Length: 79
Image (cartoon, rainbow, N blue to C red):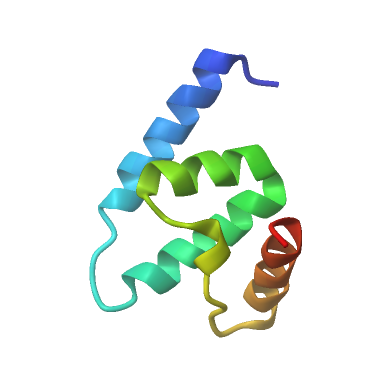
C-alpha cells in the first residue's frame, strides 16, 4: 500500500517514461498501457491518463484479445 506521496511519485515516474514514447504507434502503445493501469487500479490509470492529457473515454481498442478485453473494461467503468 502506497501513501499519497508515493502514489504521486509513481504517477510522475510513469508519466515521465510514457512521455518518451514516440513513433507512429505512440497512441496505440499509450492506450494499451493505460488499459493495463486501469485494470490494476482505476485511480492510478485515471491519474496517469489525466497527467498525459488523454481522455480515458476516447481510448481506442488495439489488436490483441487481452487489450480488447481491457479496453472494454475501461469503457464499462466510464459509461
